[in-house]
Length: 299
Image (cartoon, rainbow, N blue to C red; front, side):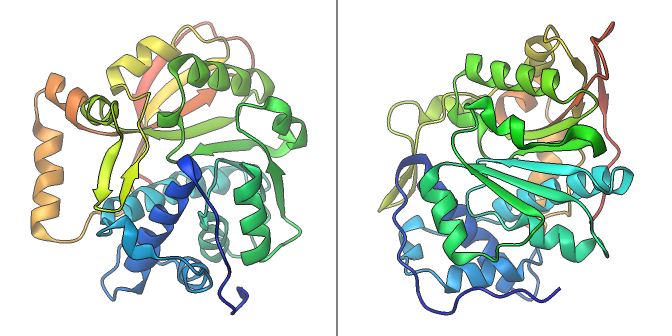
């Protein structure tokens, strides 16, 4: 598919949590520029090149952010292979370019896409990214549930919350998931959360990414074990699944660190490891709750 981004440098004015979209874009674009990058993301490169932004302020890029995006792609694609005409809802999408990566990976793609983000982000996406018939945008918070009225659930619904829920309070997270389960029976939701240790370290002043930038504080982050306890009582939640990851990271040291993290005792894993979670919504009110481990999809 031929895509293009306006060539002139565009001004950008994002603040607060929305500004983190620039950090994650920079990480993906830097990876995509590498010959040995962990993600193929030409739209991220074009988008970054179109912006008048001092990306150096965000510090060194980390391949973990690109790996997270690839994992979201893998799980989304697995759902779309079973529901080719589904609607993908990208909550707080920021400057993600997932639609174009997936559209390139799925020949003749028929899925539809709904971006939900704050007005400043939606305005920026409208200026810098191609507007296609299969893409709709809602300029509002994910916590304003009226975006759900824009979704046709008849062909399946896959909801992503990449890098979002950690900025909400626990009650807001549970309320959002419960409402999604009520409105989209038979659908699925994918989200990530940081490890509890990182949440604690961020509480006072956020996390320093560089001398000139701090990531905002993260109010919410729990372990896989705690998620079962929290989500189990929610009406309409059929199963909580530890989602499959995408490609392995680059480099022996990085891969050794990943392997070590998986071999830690359970309590340490819960405290130190991030989580990637799929929530399946029941077709009707559930009579049981289960946790399973998803087979690792690929993209």
